[in-house]
Length: 285
Image (tube, rainbow, N blue to C red; front, side, top):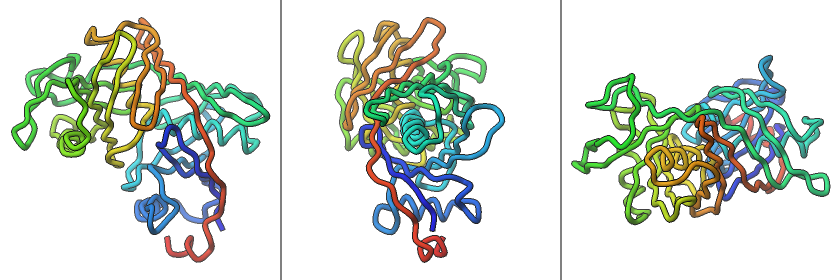
């Protein structure tokens, strides 16, 4: 049997497991099965604790389609809570090695459990490899992009260790986000695909967003998407540098956008349950 924990950040849920508990590596098929909400545990991804020599802890982040993500803000906050609550971390501040770089996590502990986590997410950059009329060495800020269905959008590309595409809209429309999200995710301008945020600025320190996540689809919340949207809002002059509140269907996170474009992500986190994958289920993977 394989132990796991299930946690969420504003409804963005992940299954946490340890590589040491697995007899064989996780295949894309196994990841898909575990993340399936009818045939498995269910989740927006898997956080796999792995050995590392670069930080206090290491994690691999898998999307529910079986692909691997470079970084996840909510995933890191869920992972940080798991590390403290399950006795792996001995101090509330520690570093985590991700495919998108090493980050620092700071946990707020109440009654022996973590309920709030801040993550230093690294620096935002505004590049995309193949945006037309822009070139690989220029910032992709407020440039036009034509979609396969004929829709024309103005987009800002942001990397926070994983790729994001932000488009500012006058009104948030979930049906439009679900329709246009896949077209942006798979656009030729993003050869490794991209996460997508539809953003509506509601103040100099506040943005509402809808999210289409690469490899996961429409999600209630996303920490790295919040970082991407906040950074893009500041870069486009729509929000002021400093603390930006990012509101999503699942709730609100705060992103501090600093003058050097380094980002601090803050928000609540909750563990829902722990369990074990049965020997029968594990064998089916």
